[in-house]
Image (cartoon, rainbow, N blue to C red; front, side, top):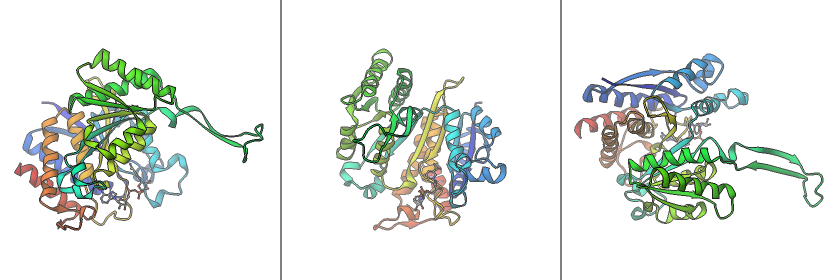
Length: 373
Ligand code: NAD
């Protein structure tokens, strides 16, 4: 029987609290569905700094390279704010992303019916929303050279005398690999990809469009592909978000568009994410899953954290790292049922009320719903 390996890195603040609830879900699948998980746990972020003096120990990094999937809670907190930049908790996270070469960042924006009123848009615009933004994560303007702030002394017209430079740079290979990830994902969903860039004003955007089209024509002709300028994409996301299935875009546009799409669905406590790399020997991608939220020091240790973002991140691991799509659907349905029943952590409590629960009770309710479905 296949054993699915998982490295859990709870991290700091509410990270360990929400991870405890994921453990309940894992236990349920082991006991009730006979799925074997080989779960190990280690430190990241401030917790790793406290023990090892670094935010990610080399042994933990090595373990992350070996497992089928990594599930991370959150890192950071006020106790670590004044640390040297090189050992800040976030460096642990960045090291994982860099050394695992996780180039495709997946941010689903899914609107659960029971929470449609939490959206900043009208219910009829967001009801049933289910889109996936695939953002290129390891290249583009955040990494391109040359970069820096220089003096511009020879230019008397420049008041202030300085110039700031960043470079948008993409190779065709970088574009093709993230495009492939998007087409593969679309095949498991609505079979449609919309690619976004600014080919009207940027050469790198022209290359982006041509390479995405090349991957489509040569490898995925059966998937529907469209192209859109990213500024129009931003408008369409708030005008008629339901027109999209999978959106693929570069690092900078993806950063902005995925945050905008996230707010279509309401609370930060609901948002999962995945970062995928190249396929491993078993054909599945290297992968790390994590909720979008941070360590929430303001509510840590009080049983107030919503564990759903982390639980839905595990659902993504079921789907993309373990090829357990039906089990992922079941877990998402359990979350949907609990929300429809009016079960609410504090962040989900709206004017219509509901049954207030703690972090732990929310986990229990989701496990109960798994058994009931
Ligand atoms: P945050 O996401 O931790 O919190 C923002 C707000 O949302 C807070 O009011 C918090 O209570 C609330 N919130 C977040 N997650 C919640 C949940 N699951 N349930 C209920 N409420 C939730 O962002 P922040 O306050 O800007 O940052 C706090 C710390 O987290 C900082 O140290 C920051 O660097 C770090 N951070 C880490 C990550 C990560 O690990 N990926 C991401 C963002 C921020």
